[in-house]
Length: 451
Image (cartoon, rainbow, N blue to C red; front, side, top):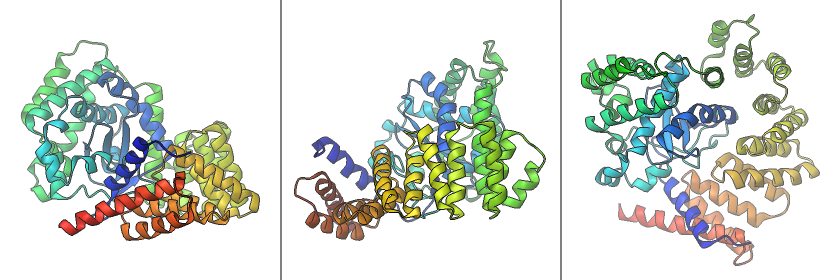
């Protein structure tokens, strides 16, 4: 059934917004378990700020300390900052501060800065609905390049001191309303105190986008000292501590040296988080048998956890044990049928097994993943393969064109979209999607010609 014009326009706009960020590449981290944990931790803060639960928290794979907002729907945080934190309340303090920038309308007050950073729309979608693995890595996939180090983006993201004070105060109120100890914001600011003495080139990006002043610190300290409410000194909930620990286990397991991770966590700690960390470290160290053994222990602890089932599927898939990977991913998808990343993994494993029935099932599963997240380049690559194996070369060209557009290869996108237009019936859903890509390619070419 043809899509409504408004949806087609949205899709074309989304593709356009993602074009042109291939230089200055930084990657984002996509992982269903991490994203679930971030939703759990962000939920009380977003409610207090009056923001929708659909506001997304996106982790950038970058060792520097930074967090920022680029539109009204997304909060970005660097993995380096998250991994320096010791308590979930600290992460929630950062989220509260950034949510305050959104709720207080700070971004909308800087149209000139937005224009100087290429366009508000381009930053607004920045990895938004996109991401996925452009590089093909299975674990925490690299996504669309974002160029946050460019001077134009720094200008756009820079906040005034007045805005920072305002965001601090609003963020502190959100924390109290959510039952989170506001003193955690002081702990976060302490991470940046030493940065002020460094030269600009050595400072973490947060200092260049969020001016830290003695006045800010005094105001936050005064708020904390003046609180007599129940949030003062409140401990994080067990649920918050649990998901924070899982997020950090996943990040440290995949991003740190496996040998160092194993030394840090120890081999005798039989707790859930230690077991999760070891499973990932063994996998990263190419010790599949030990990794599978550790995941088996996790599944004994939580047999109905879709993310542990997914991890088992990933390890089996990357160890080329495709039949068992299919079974593990199928169980994960059964437990979490709305998780696009898990569905994509299931489809990928089915394609790797390469049976006639599995290829047909892969197309169905990947179409479900596409319906929930149509901007995952790796999923699009797999879906194109599923269409091609089923003899539907027109749709294979459509999704290939969309993948090329998302990763900024517009000439290739145009070639594939033109091919799809000739293979698919005029007015069909796939044909209309091809026209979206052609429209984006034309606009992108026009922009290049004007430079």
